[in-house]
Length: 249
Length: 249
Image (cartoon, rainbow over the protein chains, first blue to last red):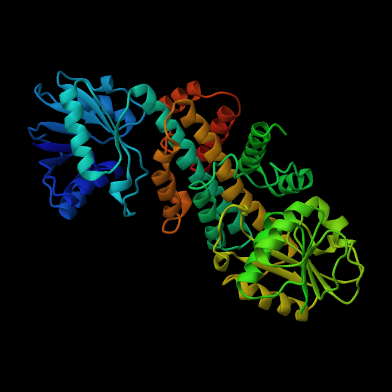
């Protein structure tokens, strides 16, 4: 089976790398960014092009959500399968006469960070059983966690991930801003952060809640508010309000 | 040196356990909750009392912030050292004629969760060098990370921890609420959460930010808002606003 990956960003890079590590050949990486494609091509030994899209059986579109529709129109072939990798788009966003599908890896990707691909859940949706089977088998060569998922479910998966990953990272960024302002090394907080995460492997996060809001410790809440301003203060108030609502305080 | 721990909550339990694991004898665990004290006493083989506070050289008060002042008045001895374990109280909250200090472990404690005490940072403040040295040496028998810290600094350490730990845990609780509502197992998100945390060991969290807000993906932001309500919607808006402000989007 001839596979082409379209895109040169984090998802394209890691997906191409995961395929190569499992010995799955890629016919081409295609995109607009010659410099990034060149780097991926060299590292993974895969041909690339910015102009001529290779004939293939499967095209996996790994571009930003807003570009998926436009990029999908570059595929003029009919007898082929096209997948996008977005958590928040229906497969019908793909615009062409080919068979449409979704191939969604639930993970956060940075080019500079190594990943254990076998742990990444993949969510698959296709138009028919044969395509569904094909994509499930392909994803299963990379990952131990491959599941079918409708668009409706995928939207909620993505939303959950935004809370559990994107927002968590932003809290780390705001926390570091606070500790940096006092010249406290952010490294001091890594054991605490690790413990916070390890806990949820054993305890429901709702039962594991600690801190001044769940204790309704008004003195500390007020003291902290005096130390904060702008967006960090807004986050402080919103999170505490939400904690107190969850526990009916 | 005779050491007494006052309190029967998570901090008292884990501190007592950390001391016992390192073979540091405890003269007594003292508190009001006979049932909890009984359990700790039995597990760690330490005498307990709810009535008669043992004579000691060092009392470590491990009670909620709002009880520290009252509890500190139970210590009528003068020639002794008293420490509280709060991140957000000055040592002067301790009310008595003894020498005052702070012995603050930066960690989140649940009784049911095992901990690697050696990784927990301890922040120490005392009235004089001798007490400071004594507490630093004591903490160093438990932990590899022991530092001096003024009250001013401790307030910011605690505040950073609230963002990086308490609020992060609450995001996990809200995320699980979303995934539960769609019968999506929260376990699917654990590799993603792990990766989010592992990243900050290698990349500054500000550089590691991903998700719809930092991409300014208005379509996804609006789609997600339609799926949310109440506190989760408030969190969604506040966090996205803060992300967009941080990156000047």
